[in-house]
Length: 361
Image (cartoon, rainbow, N blue to C red; front, side, top):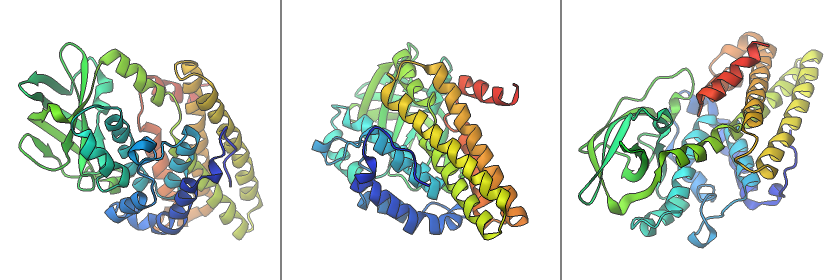
Protein backbone atom coordinates (compact mmCIF):
# COMPACT_ATOMS: atom_id res chain seq x y z
CA UNK A 1 0.00 0.00 0.00
CA UNK A 2 1.39 3.38 -0.98
CA UNK A 3 0.68 6.44 1.19
CA UNK A 4 -1.36 9.21 -0.37
CA UNK A 5 0.56 11.93 -2.18
CA UNK A 6 1.72 14.86 -0.09
CA UNK A 7 2.46 18.32 -1.31
CA UNK A 8 6.02 17.37 -2.30
CA UNK A 9 7.41 14.70 -4.61
CA UNK A 10 8.95 12.65 -1.82
CA UNK A 11 8.86 9.39 -3.79
CA UNK A 12 11.56 10.67 -6.16
CA UNK A 13 14.03 11.30 -3.34
CA UNK A 14 17.10 9.05 -3.04
CA UNK A 15 16.61 9.26 0.73
CA UNK A 16 13.12 7.79 0.44
CA UNK A 17 14.41 4.98 -1.75
CA UNK A 18 17.24 4.30 0.71
CA UNK A 19 14.76 4.15 3.61
CA UNK A 20 12.46 1.84 1.65
CA UNK A 21 15.37 -0.51 0.87
CA UNK A 22 16.52 -0.60 4.48
CA UNK A 23 12.98 -1.27 5.67
CA UNK A 24 12.52 -4.09 3.18
CA UNK A 25 15.96 -5.72 3.26
CA UNK A 26 17.22 -5.14 6.82
CA UNK A 27 14.56 -4.02 9.28
CA UNK A 28 11.50 -6.11 8.44
CA UNK A 29 13.33 -9.45 8.09
CA UNK A 30 14.93 -9.04 11.53
CA UNK A 31 12.11 -7.25 13.39
CA UNK A 32 11.02 -10.28 15.42
CA UNK A 33 14.61 -11.01 16.43
CA UNK A 34 15.18 -7.39 17.46
CA UNK A 35 11.91 -7.33 19.39
CA UNK A 36 13.06 -10.34 21.41
CA UNK A 37 16.52 -8.93 22.14
CA UNK A 38 17.84 -5.43 21.58
CA UNK A 39 18.29 -2.96 18.76
CA UNK A 40 21.73 -3.65 17.23
CA UNK A 41 24.06 -0.73 16.78
CA UNK A 42 24.74 -2.08 13.28
CA UNK A 43 21.16 -1.18 12.33
CA UNK A 44 21.78 2.42 13.37
CA UNK A 45 25.12 2.43 11.55
CA UNK A 46 23.24 1.34 8.41
CA UNK A 47 20.94 4.34 8.82
CA UNK A 48 24.00 6.58 8.96
CA UNK A 49 25.59 5.05 5.86
CA UNK A 50 22.32 5.59 3.99
CA UNK A 51 22.28 9.28 4.96
CA UNK A 52 19.16 8.87 7.10
CA UNK A 53 20.65 10.33 10.29
CA UNK A 54 21.32 13.72 8.74
CA UNK A 55 17.85 14.45 7.37
CA UNK A 56 17.31 17.21 9.96
CA UNK A 57 20.65 18.95 9.38
CA UNK A 58 21.27 21.86 6.99
CA UNK A 59 22.87 21.09 3.65
CA UNK A 60 25.85 23.33 4.37
CA UNK A 61 26.65 21.11 7.35
CA UNK A 62 26.51 17.90 5.34
CA UNK A 63 22.87 17.11 6.05
CA UNK A 64 19.98 16.80 3.63
CA UNK A 65 17.59 19.27 5.30
CA UNK A 66 14.76 17.03 4.16
CA UNK A 67 11.39 18.69 3.48
CA UNK A 68 8.79 17.84 6.16
CA UNK A 69 6.68 15.59 3.91
CA UNK A 70 9.75 13.54 2.97
CA UNK A 71 10.96 13.31 6.57
CA UNK A 72 7.54 12.04 7.66
CA UNK A 73 7.46 9.34 4.97
CA UNK A 74 10.96 8.19 5.91
CA UNK A 75 9.96 7.90 9.57
CA UNK A 76 6.78 6.11 8.55
CA UNK A 77 8.39 3.39 6.44
CA UNK A 78 11.12 2.71 9.01
CA UNK A 79 8.66 2.49 11.91
CA UNK A 80 6.37 0.16 10.00
CA UNK A 81 9.25 -2.24 9.40
CA UNK A 82 10.79 -2.23 12.89
CA UNK A 83 9.35 0.21 15.39
CA UNK A 84 12.02 -0.38 18.04
CA UNK A 85 14.93 0.49 15.77
CA UNK A 86 12.99 3.45 14.39
CA UNK A 87 12.31 4.78 17.89
CA UNK A 88 15.97 4.71 18.91
CA UNK A 89 16.91 6.51 15.69
CA UNK A 90 14.08 9.04 16.08
CA UNK A 91 15.67 10.47 19.23
CA UNK A 92 18.67 11.46 17.14
CA UNK A 93 16.98 14.02 14.90
CA UNK A 94 15.88 16.43 17.62
CA UNK A 95 19.42 16.63 18.95
CA UNK A 96 20.77 17.23 15.44
CA UNK A 97 18.38 20.15 14.96
CA UNK A 98 19.25 21.57 18.37
CA UNK A 99 23.00 21.42 17.74
CA UNK A 100 22.59 22.79 14.21
CA UNK A 101 20.62 25.80 15.52
CA UNK A 102 23.19 26.48 18.24
CA UNK A 103 26.30 28.63 18.30
CA UNK A 104 27.80 26.53 21.09
CA UNK A 105 31.48 25.75 20.95
CA UNK A 106 30.78 22.03 20.58
CA UNK A 107 28.84 22.52 17.35
CA UNK A 108 31.81 22.48 14.99
CA UNK A 109 33.12 19.14 16.20
CA UNK A 110 29.86 17.42 17.12
CA UNK A 111 27.50 18.22 14.26
CA UNK A 112 29.46 16.49 11.45
CA UNK A 113 29.66 13.32 13.56
CA UNK A 114 25.93 13.39 14.23
CA UNK A 115 25.09 13.98 10.57
CA UNK A 116 27.10 10.95 9.40
CA UNK A 117 26.04 8.72 12.29
CA UNK A 118 29.55 8.41 13.63
CA UNK A 119 27.86 9.46 16.86
CA UNK A 120 24.25 8.62 17.74
CA UNK A 121 22.27 10.95 19.99
CA UNK A 122 19.49 10.38 22.47
CA UNK A 123 17.31 12.83 24.36
CA UNK A 124 16.15 13.30 27.93
CA UNK A 125 13.55 16.04 28.05
CA UNK A 126 10.00 14.59 28.30
CA UNK A 127 10.01 15.49 32.00
CA UNK A 128 9.96 19.18 31.04
CA UNK A 129 6.31 18.77 30.06
CA UNK A 130 5.49 18.33 33.77
CA UNK A 131 6.21 22.01 34.51
CA UNK A 132 5.83 23.56 37.09
CA UNK A 133 7.24 20.33 38.54
CA UNK A 134 10.94 20.11 37.87
CA UNK A 135 12.08 16.46 37.86
CA UNK A 136 15.44 17.67 36.55
CA UNK A 137 16.58 20.97 38.02
CA UNK A 138 19.41 23.07 36.67
CA UNK A 139 21.27 26.07 38.02
CA UNK A 140 24.09 28.32 36.87
CA UNK A 141 27.55 27.58 38.24
CA UNK A 142 30.97 28.89 37.33
CA UNK A 143 31.73 27.83 33.77
CA UNK A 144 28.55 25.90 33.14
CA UNK A 145 25.24 24.54 34.43
CA UNK A 146 24.57 21.95 37.14
CA UNK A 147 21.81 19.33 36.65
CA UNK A 148 20.17 17.39 39.47
CA UNK A 149 17.17 15.05 39.46
CA UNK A 150 15.65 12.11 37.60
CA UNK A 151 14.76 11.69 33.92
CA UNK A 152 12.22 8.84 33.93
CA UNK A 153 12.74 7.84 30.30
CA UNK A 154 15.90 7.71 28.23
CA UNK A 155 15.87 5.55 25.11
CA UNK A 156 18.96 3.93 23.62
CA UNK A 157 21.23 3.55 26.65
CA UNK A 158 24.30 1.63 25.54
CA UNK A 159 23.52 2.44 21.90
CA UNK A 160 23.74 6.22 21.97
CA UNK A 161 27.00 8.14 22.25
CA UNK A 162 25.62 11.46 23.48
CA UNK A 163 22.46 12.81 25.06
CA UNK A 164 20.66 16.14 24.82
CA UNK A 165 19.68 16.74 28.45
CA UNK A 166 17.03 19.29 29.38
CA UNK A 167 16.53 20.85 32.79
CA UNK A 168 14.50 23.72 34.22
CA UNK A 169 15.60 26.55 36.49
CA UNK A 170 13.66 27.94 39.43
CA UNK A 171 12.70 31.02 37.40
CA UNK A 172 11.39 29.03 34.43
CA UNK A 173 14.22 28.75 31.95
CA UNK A 174 14.82 25.55 29.98
CA UNK A 175 18.49 24.69 29.52
CA UNK A 176 19.74 21.94 27.19
CA UNK A 177 23.25 20.53 27.35
CA UNK A 178 25.03 17.78 25.42
CA UNK A 179 26.55 15.07 27.61
CA UNK A 180 28.21 11.72 27.02
CA UNK A 181 25.63 8.93 27.27
CA UNK A 182 27.62 6.75 29.65
CA UNK A 183 28.04 6.29 33.40
CA UNK A 184 30.15 9.06 34.88
CA UNK A 185 30.42 11.03 38.11
CA UNK A 186 27.01 12.66 38.57
CA UNK A 187 25.19 10.37 36.13
CA UNK A 188 23.76 6.92 36.86
CA UNK A 189 21.40 4.76 34.82
CA UNK A 190 18.95 2.11 35.93
CA UNK A 191 18.82 -1.32 34.35
CA UNK A 192 16.82 -1.31 31.10
CA UNK A 193 13.10 -1.06 31.89
CA UNK A 194 11.16 -4.19 30.99
CA UNK A 195 8.07 -3.13 29.07
CA UNK A 196 5.26 -4.95 27.30
CA UNK A 197 6.52 -3.42 24.06
CA UNK A 198 9.76 -1.86 22.84
CA UNK A 199 12.03 -3.34 25.53
CA UNK A 200 14.55 -3.68 22.70
CA UNK A 201 15.03 0.11 22.79
CA UNK A 202 17.08 -0.13 26.01
CA UNK A 203 15.06 2.53 27.81
CA UNK A 204 16.36 3.46 31.26
CA UNK A 205 15.84 5.94 34.06
CA UNK A 206 18.65 8.47 34.45
CA UNK A 207 19.67 10.03 37.74
CA UNK A 208 21.69 13.23 37.82
CA UNK A 209 23.58 14.18 40.97
CA UNK A 210 25.05 17.65 40.47
CA UNK A 211 26.27 16.86 36.98
CA UNK A 212 27.99 19.94 35.56
CA UNK A 213 27.73 20.60 31.82
CA UNK A 214 30.28 23.17 30.62
CA UNK A 215 29.16 26.26 28.72
CA UNK A 216 30.83 24.86 25.59
CA UNK A 217 28.16 22.13 25.50
CA UNK A 218 25.08 24.21 26.33
CA UNK A 219 23.15 24.27 23.06
CA UNK A 220 19.87 25.92 24.02
CA UNK A 221 18.40 28.26 26.63
CA UNK A 222 14.82 29.49 26.42
CA UNK A 223 11.95 30.48 28.74
CA UNK A 224 9.68 27.55 29.59
CA UNK A 225 6.47 28.98 28.10
CA UNK A 226 7.82 29.41 24.54
CA UNK A 227 9.41 25.98 24.85
CA UNK A 228 6.10 24.40 25.84
CA UNK A 229 4.33 26.13 22.96
CA UNK A 230 6.95 24.86 20.53
CA UNK A 231 6.73 21.35 21.98
CA UNK A 232 2.94 21.35 21.66
CA UNK A 233 3.28 21.85 17.92
CA UNK A 234 4.64 18.31 17.83
CA UNK A 235 2.47 16.59 20.44
CA UNK A 236 -0.85 17.75 18.96
CA UNK A 237 -0.09 15.99 15.68
CA UNK A 238 -0.06 12.25 14.98
CA UNK A 239 3.34 10.57 15.02
CA UNK A 240 4.42 9.32 11.56
CA UNK A 241 5.10 5.97 13.22
CA UNK A 242 1.36 5.56 13.81
CA UNK A 243 0.84 5.61 10.05
CA UNK A 244 3.74 3.20 9.59
CA UNK A 245 2.45 0.60 12.05
CA UNK A 246 -1.09 0.96 10.67
CA UNK A 247 0.11 0.52 7.11
CA UNK A 248 2.16 -2.57 8.01
CA UNK A 249 -0.81 -4.12 9.85
CA UNK A 250 -3.13 -3.57 6.87
CA UNK A 251 -0.59 -5.03 4.47
CA UNK A 252 -0.20 -8.17 6.63
CA UNK A 253 -3.98 -8.40 7.03
CA UNK A 254 -4.52 -8.35 3.27
CA UNK A 255 -1.85 -10.98 2.60
CA UNK A 256 -2.97 -13.22 5.44
CA UNK A 257 -6.61 -13.03 4.43
CA UNK A 258 -5.88 -13.72 0.77
CA UNK A 259 -3.72 -16.74 1.66
CA UNK A 260 -6.49 -18.12 3.90
CA UNK A 261 -9.24 -17.34 1.39
CA UNK A 262 -10.83 -15.19 4.11
CA UNK A 263 -13.05 -12.84 2.12
CA UNK A 264 -14.16 -10.76 5.08
CA UNK A 265 -10.52 -10.18 6.03
CA UNK A 266 -9.76 -8.98 2.51
CA UNK A 267 -12.75 -6.62 2.73
CA UNK A 268 -11.57 -5.37 6.14
CA UNK A 269 -8.10 -4.68 4.77
CA UNK A 270 -9.61 -2.76 1.86
CA UNK A 271 -11.79 -0.61 4.12
CA UNK A 272 -8.95 0.05 6.57
CA UNK A 273 -6.76 1.01 3.62
CA UNK A 274 -9.33 3.54 2.47
CA UNK A 275 -9.43 5.06 5.95
CA UNK A 276 -5.64 5.21 6.03
CA UNK A 277 -5.44 6.95 2.63
CA UNK A 278 -7.95 9.56 3.79
CA UNK A 279 -6.07 10.07 7.05
CA UNK A 280 -2.77 10.44 5.19
CA UNK A 281 -4.27 13.14 2.99
CA UNK A 282 -5.66 14.97 6.02
CA UNK A 283 -2.29 14.79 7.76
CA UNK A 284 -0.64 16.35 4.72
CA UNK A 285 -3.20 19.14 4.74
CA UNK A 286 -2.80 19.95 8.41
CA UNK A 287 0.98 19.65 8.50
CA UNK A 288 1.85 21.24 5.16
CA UNK A 289 -0.86 23.86 4.67
CA UNK A 290 -2.09 24.99 8.12
CA UNK A 291 0.20 27.20 10.26
CA UNK A 292 1.61 25.15 13.17
CA UNK A 293 0.11 27.38 15.87
CA UNK A 294 -3.40 27.04 14.47
CA UNK A 295 -6.12 24.37 14.73
CA UNK A 296 -4.70 22.61 17.78
CA UNK A 297 -8.10 21.26 18.83
CA UNK A 298 -8.63 19.91 15.34
CA UNK A 299 -5.16 18.38 15.33
CA UNK A 300 -5.72 16.66 18.68
CA UNK A 301 -9.00 15.19 17.45
CA UNK A 302 -7.30 14.00 14.28
CA UNK A 303 -4.41 12.50 16.27
CA UNK A 304 -6.95 10.48 18.26
CA UNK A 305 -8.73 9.41 15.08
CA UNK A 306 -5.49 8.11 13.56
CA UNK A 307 -4.57 6.28 16.77
CA UNK A 308 -7.98 4.63 16.79
CA UNK A 309 -7.40 3.54 13.19
CA UNK A 310 -4.08 1.99 14.25
CA UNK A 311 -5.83 0.07 17.03
CA UNK A 312 -8.50 -1.14 14.59
CA UNK A 313 -5.92 -2.30 12.03
CA UNK A 314 -3.66 -4.13 14.49
CA UNK A 315 -6.65 -5.74 16.23
CA UNK A 316 -8.05 -6.93 12.90
CA UNK A 317 -4.68 -8.50 12.09
CA UNK A 318 -4.64 -10.37 15.41
CA UNK A 319 -8.18 -11.64 14.80
CA UNK A 320 -7.41 -12.77 11.24
CA UNK A 321 -4.41 -14.79 12.39
CA UNK A 322 -6.30 -16.59 15.17
CA UNK A 323 -4.04 -18.48 17.60
CA UNK A 324 -0.82 -18.02 15.67
CA UNK A 325 -1.15 -14.25 16.15
CA UNK A 326 -0.07 -14.76 19.76
CA UNK A 327 3.19 -16.55 18.97
CA UNK A 328 6.20 -14.34 19.57
CA UNK A 329 7.45 -14.81 16.03
CA UNK A 330 4.21 -13.56 14.46
CA UNK A 331 4.08 -9.89 13.38
CA UNK A 332 0.47 -9.51 14.58
CA UNK A 333 1.25 -9.51 18.30
CA UNK A 334 4.34 -7.33 17.81
CA UNK A 335 2.44 -4.71 15.82
CA UNK A 336 -0.38 -4.76 18.39
CA UNK A 337 2.12 -4.15 21.20
CA UNK A 338 3.85 -1.42 19.22
CA UNK A 339 0.44 0.19 18.72
CA UNK A 340 -0.12 0.16 22.48
CA UNK A 341 3.22 1.91 22.92
CA UNK A 342 2.36 4.57 20.33
CA UNK A 343 -0.91 5.32 22.13
CA UNK A 344 1.04 6.76 25.06
CA UNK A 345 4.31 7.91 23.47
CA UNK A 346 4.69 11.72 23.69
CA UNK A 347 1.27 11.83 25.33
CA UNK A 348 0.06 15.00 27.03
CA UNK A 349 -3.01 15.29 29.23
CA UNK A 350 -5.07 16.99 26.49
CA UNK A 351 -4.10 14.24 24.02
CA UNK A 352 -5.06 11.55 26.53
CA UNK A 353 -8.45 13.12 27.21
CA UNK A 354 -9.29 13.53 23.52
CA UNK A 355 -8.30 9.93 22.77
CA UNK A 356 -10.37 8.58 25.68
CA UNK A 357 -13.41 10.36 24.28
CA UNK A 358 -13.25 7.85 21.42
CA UNK A 359 -14.75 5.36 23.87
CA UNK A 360 -17.29 7.71 25.44
CA UNK A 361 -19.45 8.86 22.52
